Length: 278
Image 1 (cartoon, rainbow, N blue to C red):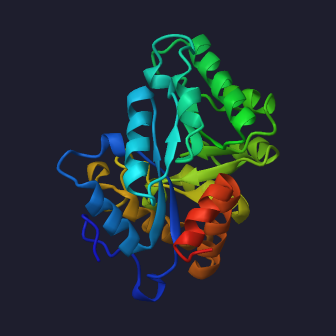
Image 2 (cartoon, helix red, strand yellow; image 1 turned 120 degrees about the vertical axis):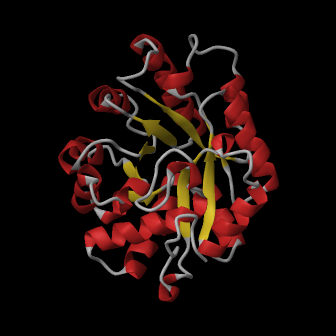
């Protein structure tokens, strides 16, 4: 099976290893793409689970709708700093967080380059960190141009399992987060020849802390335009991680799957077991 960019999804000898796409956005997938087709392509590529991630109320509700139809697309719900319009209120996120279809909270975090005032961003981030702690849910965190303030916030909530989505720093900047046992989820940027920070991160972070994602349809791969990226391409990201680390694909694939379960917990383990993957 080939991807939209014409590059094989995996070498035949590796086509059967399972991968979890930790982060993609079904609300942003182009209208001409059918979710059933996306699900089938993901499964055929070995991407057995892909976490459908929200970023505001509407998109979070959408992830629950998707998860109710496609069990391999479980939900994450949250409020992203780009879409904040006021202080945390209404309780809608709390109501969504208790759904059995939800594996994680997010996407949330801080962004030093968006127009949302930082105090509002920090209020929502603290709100979701507290919720993650109370509900024992992992948190998918955005940290563009805000690595230090994100680090300070996470230090106030050391018990929360944190997945640093598409982490913008290098291996050196990752070190304080390793002390907090954070996971680093790398995207299709890992397949690009000019992605120096991502390469540094993949080589410098212990394999036990790495995860893969597509962030579909937001981040391009070397040979796939961002609008064509979908969960099946998480397989290419996993292969890129193995190549960058110069480690056997099977070893890296097993570690990535193990890390995914460690990050997302028993609900993911149950999903994988139901598919005969655990």
